[in-house]
Structure formats: C-alpha cells, structure tokens
Image 1 (cartoon, rainbow, N blue to C red):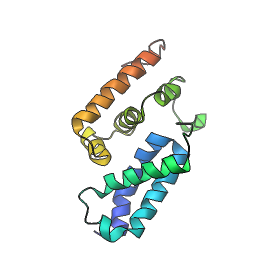
Image 2: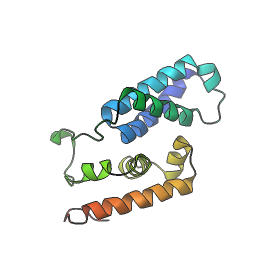
Image 3: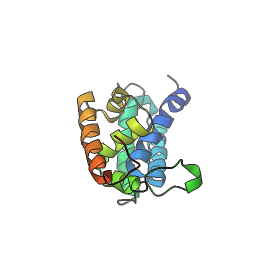
Image 4: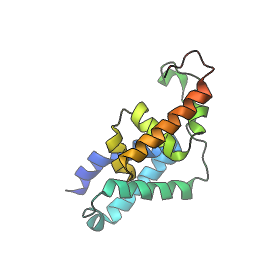
Amino acid sequence: MEFESFVEMVGPRLRAALVAAYGEDAGLDAAAEALAYAWEHWERLRSMQNPAGYLYRVGQSAARRLHQRPTLLPPPPAERLPDFEPALLPALDSLSEAQRVCVVLVHGFAWRQVDVAELLEIESATVRTHLSRGLRKLHHALEGSTHVQF
C-alpha cells in the first residue's frame, strides 16, 4: 500500500479516535503528529500488522506530551449540534480515557466494536467492558435528566 492511500483510509479514523480521547484541539494535534511520524517511518510502518493501532499509540504519546491534561470535549458552538443533554459533556469528561474513547466511537461515531478493538489494540471483550462501565457511569451521572433514555 502506498502512503497516500494509507492516510486516506486510516487518517479519518485516527483523528476521530484521538479527538474522542483528548478533545478536539489536542486530538487533531496528536493525529497530525502521528501521521507525520508515519511519513518519516513509512518503510518500517508499512510492514506492521496493525499500523493504525501503532499510530494511535504514537498519537497518545504526542497528546500527552503536547497538552498536559487538556479540557476534554469543550462545549461546541450550539449551532453545530442538535439538542442534547447539557450534562452529557461533563459526564463524558468524568469517564476514564478508555471508557470515553469506546463510548464516543461506538455510540457517537457508530463504529463497530471490533473496529475500536483493532485500533486500540485490545480485545473486543475489553471494548465491551469499557462500554458497559462507561455507559453505567453515564447513566448514573445523567439519571436525573428527563431527556436521557438508555
């Protein structure tokens, strides 16, 4: 596979996963760092079994290095979003990183659990565990809301 084709295929998924984990600014910066790393190390990376998962780890390191505990999921402009529970963003921010990434990718971006597992280089059962625990925490945090149904 050529580098350009790889970036077209993996780039959007990588950006979505890192934005879910670190917020928009840090996630996009981390994805750019990871893709720059891919360009510099393409010969070695192209032979890996899961280069997207490896780049996700590169992006994690970049996000942590570039942004010390950023504010996750900043409130987006109201005109860009449909109506949603105002307590949702703080509730998502209270989840562990793994729980938040799994919940946002599966329920926010409609990813299949197997795709999340592949990108994060974890078992599908681990994704299910993160989803279950994350959704339980969200349900508990949002249980007073009349707008949220699980």
